[in-house]
Amino acid sequence: MSDVTIRGYHPSDVEAVVRVINACNEADGWSFRENVQSFQLRDSDPAMHLDRHSLIVDADGHAVGYARMFREPGTRLFVILWLEPAWRGQGIEQRLIERLQAEAAAFTEPAFDVAARSGQPTYAVALQELGFHPVRSWWTMRIDLRAELPAPAFPPGIELRPFVPGQDEEMLTWLVNDVFSEHWGEGEHRLESIRAEVAMPDFRADLLLFAQKEGQAVGYVWSWADPHPEVTGDRYAYIGDLGVRKAYRGHGLGRALLLRALHDVKTRGMVAADLDVDGPNADAKHLYESVGFRQQQELRWYRKELHR
Image (cartoon, rainbow, N blue to C red; front, side, top):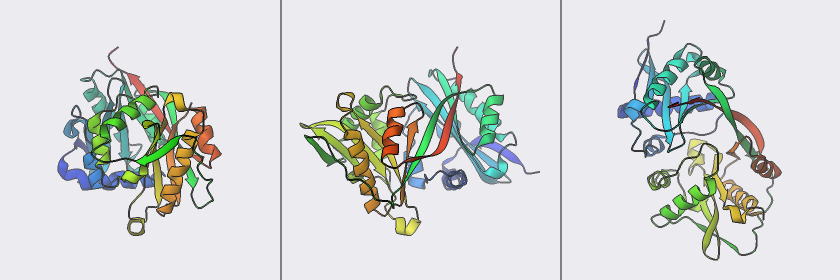
């Protein structure tokens, strides 16, 4: 019987944690890949402390799992688990969740959510045993970029320009909060978080495009693609954000931004692109399906209310 321990994260764990995250993502069919730099830069919330709000699972002295709690300020705390398949279903999931739920009691956010993807049935079982209930489904959708793509057709008066580092961080923060203010699970996006994201090593300013009308930003699309696919072999892009201000929706701007992003990552050698969509958002799913995206995988959120 292996000796399994759960402990707080230490900075010296970073390479082992990145390995665990990527091994689990590959096993669960999720194309996202972490690296040391992006992992370190992702921690921009001063209220979260990795030594308490991130947990390592060690088995016989080797990391085999990782759990991390994040915060959507004022809205919810949420946890993502990575546990190598051989160690699932042995009660480790419950131990991780209970440890982080105890830490959540110190926050004022009203909800504590944990994600379970399709292909992770032991996570769902553990959550149900701990009294969590499903509240929302998100879908990962994928498009094969080897097929021909339609050309983007922008509404009259729309101009595009790329993000300018050192200039556009505050405007981007405002735009993200404006576009996604009514979306489920979204808290307030902070300038510090935006700055951390645009400092990530794989960030490319020309893959973050603003749509402007009369000089005002009215929408944007933010894509990610490995800058060295010939070295890493990672040829999957990710459309991280696609947003249009409410007054400018319904005129084809979202579709045009999406198609422009797909053409951009395709020219960088990507063979497929993924994105996430809120399950009840039928309009968004219809848009994505209309250009060739297909549902790939479900992520289900389980919740416990806090501070009742």
